[in-house]
Image 1 (spheres, rainbow, N blue to C red):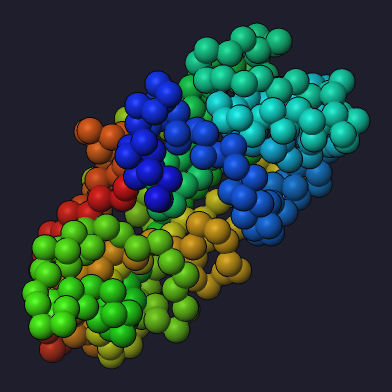
Image 2 (cartoon, rainbow, N blue to C red):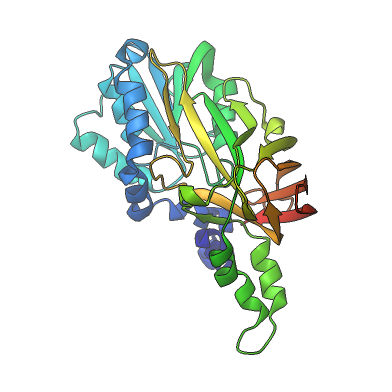
Length: 340
């Protein structure tokens, strides 16, 4: 997330804008190393493609945001007639060398530029593949670009890999970490710095949460069918309801997403949640202003609202409005967060 802040700070250097710095940041191999080493992510894509050669055989495939070209090469190995990879970042210059090094230049064409501006060698494609997901699924994601590619290039009846994403919410007990990260600002060597605490409170934390801290049921609050979803559907206000599973305290809401490749002969799925194997997306934590004292069976109801920030659409404005009337305590609040 520091990339975007640094980009804004450096905007104007050599005529570059913050958007230029955003894309340029993805040219650094370190980011791609982290993603490639994420075995859950990479092997799920590999399995969905390589284990379904009957789907890819002889097909024209479009890889949106191809990065190093790993998904394009999976598709070529699966027997695709031709693969077109598109990326805005300078990493595509390295991807061309990687494709050549692996003897796939005759099967893969890599194009540098915006999806809406590049000219593909085919008017229509049979399959779109893309690893578009961001933190909280939608933060700095490329889903808008995938939808643009879908509407412009995908054949009727064509496939998208992956084709379904679900967003999940639950609660956690996290008193020690909340004390360390947030309440620290209430007394800094005898001085109050509540303005910083308030700012830190509004920024969701992306981190790995241990399963033992999760203390309620999990509620799917948003399901995205990538074959049919519209851009306006990604701005939403939806209800959720979760049930507390033990006597405990609630210090935060937690969210993650699950991904499905349903077009496969045998569906491939993976989760970014705390009960699954680690992924680089981790989980997203939304601290509440007040601690809730909860008992087993208490129900927390509310809504979660998500929209691109008006000033910087790469940022997300998220509002959690919740109410809990429990056996020992009641709580109600509306908290505004911003992922930036």
